[in-house]
Image (cartoon, one colour):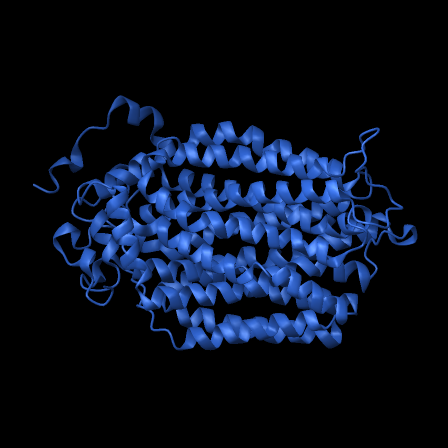
Length: 502
């Protein structure tokens, strides 16, 4: 009886909108949206030296504090946002559309800090030697709005992917990461080129219009994606706030989930401190488009943007491979060597980073693992938890990462102000500590084949999608042969009560 409706004819509505439910559309659309968020965020990193010198009076701490604001705002909303995202599963389409629009508005606020408005007391000028308080306040407020929008967007987007593609989780989340990586490459390179003809605030203003327009497209594309995810859990029980809080309590008592969140936090500290100060290093040490007129050639500005993009370019190809290997082999086999590699490469930047050619090679090497480990850490956490707490788990991971990494840009900026090389020592130490901690955490073996599930294990969440074989309520028709991925042990197995988990 459980499978009696597999062959029911699709409704007329399904016939008209079926292409929006295909795996390619869902993965491609969410990954593209991810790319928009990353493209603009990474573009601002490229113009940070201009913001520092023209609006913030040359203050390294003021410049790096913008990233700290981003981390704090993201962390504040991540965990409660994750719980609410799981409860309001039906409205994921609305949530993502609003977040996309908010993202554009936030960047518009930040751009306004540098607009040349006649008579404004906070107008920036090339000769500014002191910090503009009003302009700085606008940057802080805008960055907070941007951070909240980006943080909340990721929760339903990644939870939907994790829910719909349970047995390809590492691969699919890595593909989602690739969307962000592509944005991370295009944004900086384009911004570096535009800096030779436009002021930084003009560039950010133009970029801000893109997500505001795309918000309408996002709503059309994903307006029902949450309803399909909701159908996957309704057979187990109604999703209520009381139930969600109870499941969240179970989640936060899981020591392995906490271990992964601390590792993700340390890795986040290393990344955000490094990427924030890197463009300042490229300007101060390598003279790549500094505010001094003789260094602001198109070539220097383009190279600066390209080096920030190069950091990510290699990851576009490496991330899917790493995700696939983590699905087939073991998360640790991919993660631990990767983090150790990042530590070694970062250390090499201290003695050799002042040479442009060597720094280029080292940044390319760093890109092999810099962006591929985060989605695998997310997949490792998803391997452990129940499906009904997917967004809550993402919120917990994000909150811990943001709490740990909030002060990292300021710490990195302070160390950088003392000695350029201290940035690299600090970053390498964090990667090393994260790798050592991960080595002692017991992770479940990811299930590469649907038929090999252990119903008593940490993949308890698959029970939610089992029973009827419908990954999103329509798996039999929409995912082209993967409709039975989630057959597993269904709601009658022990998936929802994995003995090792709770």
